[in-house]
Length: 290
Image (cartoon, rainbow, N blue to C red):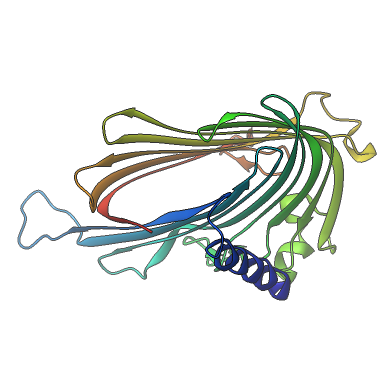
């Protein structure tokens, strides 16, 4: 599976290199941001722990449009760590997402489209309390292949719907597959699903130097093993970011991520299940566009 991801990255890079030879219909670029936070205490009567946190995000895109055919490719990579006094550094963010979408104009802003979406993480995620592995490279990973329609009025908004979409969930870590993590059956490492897929992507400058970016993924599983569940049990992944640019380099970034997946839940002390997952980060640092 590492070879598969490497191939995707090579194809994406090759696409960017090729696009630079003919800029007539191509747009390429992206940005890299790095944030760091730190706190220090010495003989502080109110108490506190020394800590540090860092994170980096890489966004890249290569887009082709000749008025009839379009091909949008995006790559997102993010990693973050935090360290506190007397404790080992631990991961706070880790994500790889690769998207490739081909479209052929059908009517005005509507296109017939085929899309590939791949998500995973780079490193192990560890439960600090007991040392158990919670995630790993390709555990989980999500590969989605879809055919449908795309509405794209401009470069700021894209609405894609596929009534027929195939999704494969990978859990290639033995300890996680043995317990049936992330929806695979115990002892298995792959779970295929067939369903419908809905994606909304947007990026707007709200006011001068304030940028909002959002990506909402929704997958409705049609497969028979899902028939005994709620008919409208839909997996949701919603990523949001708000960037405040101070100048051409310095920026503040707020992110918020929401996940609802019926196969992934936690239990409280009373045994009640909780499906909604929330993550929020705030950082200040540098952002470089290329």
